[in-house]
Image 1 (cartoon, rainbow, N blue to C red):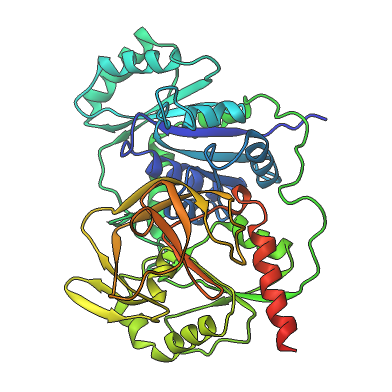
Image 2 (image 1 turned 135 degrees about the vertical axis):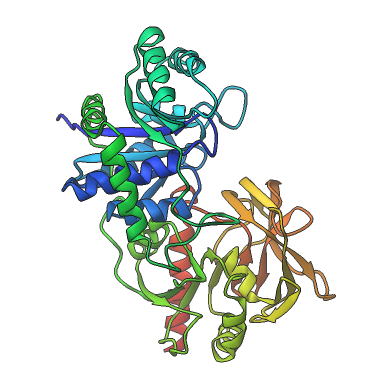
Length: 461
């Protein structure tokens, strides 16, 4: 059965070339014109993915050749593209940049996995004819790359654009699908990238980007390139095979402006395994309903440290849940909340105190990139000996408050972790550390989480 999926991947020559702004502009422009846009983000990223979801008015999934096999990527892409008029993937870093000199896990490799045309966004600052040479070099660099067009970004004026256009026409057969003028990023940034849409309404900024796309980009040409993508081929297996399990446990997850880093598939995996999910907050005074397990994702607790610290009832309750043996899984920002204190800008804020640790915010990243670790102690979440792939991106470091050595579940093979090559601190049935995981890369995590929460529910009856 034929499965046409109009699709494009927006790539750059490096980070910071403007591909995020172009991707957001296209997603909102196509969506505003009445097209259903399925957004995707290549690589481990919560912030750009959330903005893409907002621009397209549709959830965004991450596609990552480091985490996922070709089969998983094709399944996730196919099923998340259902019902869309165009699927738009934002690449990461440079088009051919991967984990080694072979470019493994690069945006180009991802494009080949899903037979996707590529549009290259190029920062043309202080360049004219050289741009054509770069485009020609990229077009022939690797076999199997379908370079469908280029978008010339940060052009200085009409004269600059005229020389760029004539150079491309003379030396390259790759079509120019738009030129963008130099402009200030309309979306504010902070230490981890674009500022969260959780903190303010970014709709007006996205509409301004869509206006820019309508004026400066060849939207018809870009849509035509997407529609020219090869037929996707036979439908892959579902992302989560089989029927969802019967609901056997209620798992809460904190989702507010402080903690909101969750891959959609992580939550979906928990639901498929039999969890009823309940959204919670640490920033208001609302009491939490009865739950059997708790998931604390990452985010920006350092930005809201004063408000979190002021909510002593919630923090005391959080500690009591940990002490009672409730299964609690905490990643990065959630880990920081479970420690004794969070330090930032010379101030120290009391947190939940589950672990005798202080996390201190630093001006530079303390852990950045993919991780690989070995589970060294059994827990309700992972069996000993399992290999866990993940990623980390944290500006804080943690230091012991003078307590005895803490139990930890992970030995870091790749990545920094929390300290001394370890991560995944353990206290009863609480697991907490800087490592982020994607459920589709860690088979069994969701099922074990739900099983532990179900066992707690059963014991309480």
